[in-house]
Image 1 (cartoon, rainbow, N blue to C red):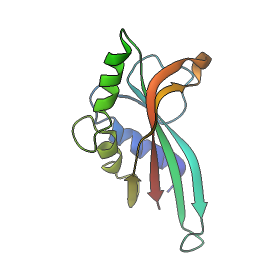
Image 2 (image 1 turned 30 degrees about the vertical axis):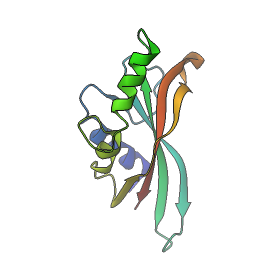
Image 3 (image 1 turned 120 degrees about the vertical axis):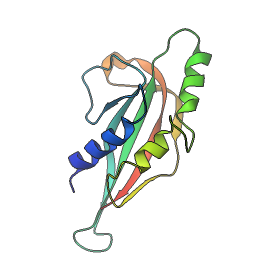
Length: 132
């Protein structure tokens, strides 16, 4: 299983969240929000055998700021729940991206600078552990 196929499976899983725009590769520009961007973060080799591989991917959730920051924060909070129709964790873990797909936490809640022109968006990161 390749990193590209894992990202594609995570994208398919996250697209089950209505209204969420998902990128399995870093886009030149994000024009629609809320959006998730899936990127590799790190990988461990040779865990059990010479063919085992455990990549960690990062799903970055970005919420555009319209109006009051409180409104954007309320919107972001809905995606952080462990279950439910907006749950990023549940969508990732149900994606079938690998035998083991686990989201243990979210982190860096707040302002996140992203690619396009150094703009800062409200968002957070979801580290995703994969074992193939």
